[in-house]
Image (cartoon, rainbow, N blue to C red; front, side):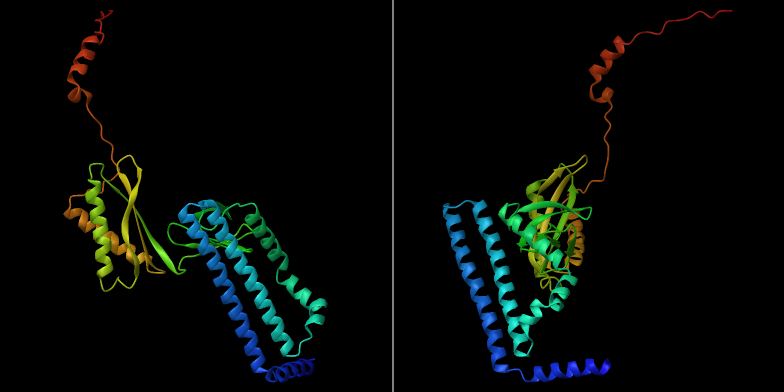
Length: 314
């Protein structure tokens, strides 16, 4: 049995070294060129859609739908081109592709590798596009594996959807399944800061302090290579019992968000101390009504019933 396997490997190696390198190179160059040109053509088509959107001739909803369809078309074209390249390569090394495709060998391998799940994902992806459930650029929430994922849709293909959350983490979700992979270091990450300040804080001054710290961090030798967009004041996020929650966001290189966030907090604390900006702790203020409203306290005292004297029974 071992001798038979060795003979088959030898036949494959003999066929492999006899490959027409020129023809194989032509197939690869043609595939890459066709993929590049098709992507460019699609980009040009949808670039014109952006121009129409700016002129007001199409709505934002139609623009998002066209961009989503464009990404789907790119995926379909790439699948077809690389399938052609693989079949051409197998043909060059002497594999009988038609017999292989019609035989039980290839079919069994494909099914064994989970083709059924892939088909289900693709069908679900088709319905996502046809039914216009969401588009590239939409902000969505979804429950995956018992956890909520919320963010902006960055990419949709027939098989997967990719969502970028506010912290910059990229979630990859199969269209036909309830499971997701979260990439915390893909291309870039966000420094997403939320902290409380006193209600007496001057918001304009606060915004100036936060933005100045962000700009100063961009100039530091140990940080300027890590920061893509400086941390800036974004908004008053919400009103809490003891403070106003402030939101600040910046963009950094993937993997450096924790270090940059730590440095920002340290510099922020120093700047707040210098500018008398208070970071309050949870507290409850109790007012004495007698001191704040003495006239009401006096009036209530006059209305209070007097205690009646009781005789002691022997």
